[in-house]
Length: 346
Image (cartoon, rainbow, N blue to C red; front, side):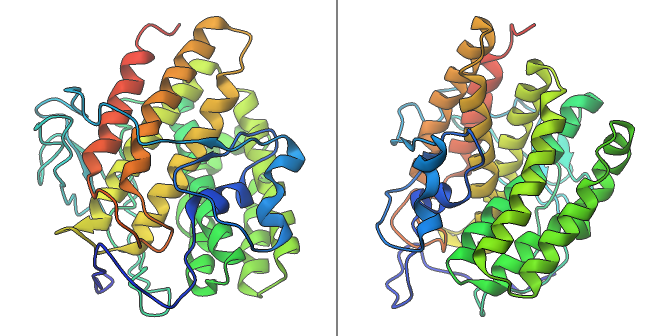
């Protein structure tokens, strides 16, 4: 397990700040509306500012109301432990005071417990560490689980692409290489059954390009190919399965965030970045669903986007710097509100 290197909540550093809104624009997928969860800053390579070229408006994710609002992320005995290598390390994640998990209590988000312990990010403690579990999915059917897992893969890549563009190469390579190294086996069989097993080669090509330090345009091209295949698979799923998978992915983001913040400090920057990447995927996919011709689906997706607004309050920049509220309960609360919104979805 990676040695944890703690970062203060407020950091004054000479290094370049990586604003999340800008980075979201850099890696937003075709047709998606990037919803910024932190202020955008100017500057950077042209492809950072590409969102408008593909019609990807950046919706400002303001600090929403009702963080918690009495809707607990889970009831007693339904906690989701963020597990790394099956360790089941529970973190408190309350809507209003209800514990999301304890060791061995409720649903362990262990899944495949992806804890490599690889330290990255120039001494910043960006190891694979704890928490790469598949939370929020003990009761998921196979189709919804696949939607969650594809979002998990894409979320890693979203964080990795943002870091790659910003020149944070070590951390970027870890995020970009992680899906093919640790996650693909979980989706290999269902993808093969659907005729989309070419995703493996695409992920390997992307990871190889990043590892070789190829120019940003080449890496982005590889990323676009991966995302294109993921979107093809999503297109074959029902709206209900997509939404269920997105809600589960939001809970995974809460699990990752729980591991990332301990004692009012960033204790695992890698997991913090993962949680951000996962929520970017949720925001983009919910935005697309909000434009559905099915009024019920569109309504649920709009409510999901509303629930996501509150999560802007728990992120600083992509390096974990800034003044923000370190409360995983905000993310779990958002997931709970999403679940309530989707309760009647057919």
